[in-house]
Amino acid sequence: MSSLCEIALVRYRGSRRPTAAAAGGTVRLRQDSEIGQIVRTRRIELGITQSELAERAQVGRHLIVRLEAGGTEIALSKVFAVMGALDLALDLVPARRSAAPAVEVPSFDAPSAEDPLRAIRIALERVASTAPQADPGATARMSEALQLVQRAATRIESERKRASDH
Image 1 (spheres, helix red, strand yellow):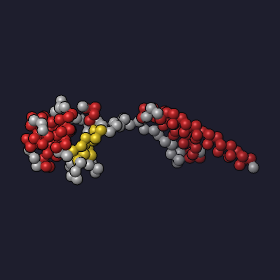
Image 2 (cartoon, one colour; image 1 turned 90 degrees about the vertical axis):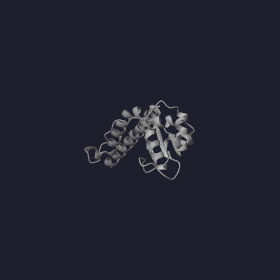
Image 3 (cartoon, helix red, strand yellow; image 1 turned 60 degrees about the vertical axis):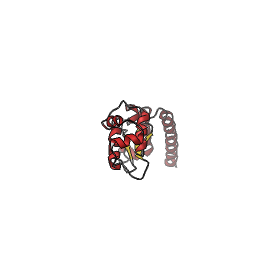
Image 4 (cartoon, one colour; image 1 turned 30 degrees about the horizontal axis):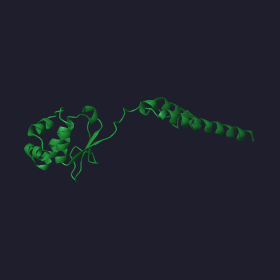
């Protein structure tokens, strides 16, 4: 379950929010054992015992004890039953890929400021070189954008030459 927990969000369906939750009422889980912490916090907020929660969720009290203690070998259906009894929801969202390496975008205060299109072209080339790591489909889109910038640069350069010739 640990791979799922990297992509899971827990939120209250009701109006009350967990103390650990962000402004939107969600908590990004990094480990499956964190579900137990959230369950315990919510149970205490509601003022119910482990036995009462077990009865509401139609599970054994020992399961609540294990879950709150960070137990990880618990059937997902049981976790959902407990969360439902606490009016919690588990939303699965795509995992964020590890951040792509930072791309240095030339500053327009740099020497390239004399040629903004060159600066854009350099930035696009750098982004294109890292894009496959972030998004496999990005390579084609970045190549297309780079070609458009190169065509625009060629057109602008020819316009500059024409203007300086006249």
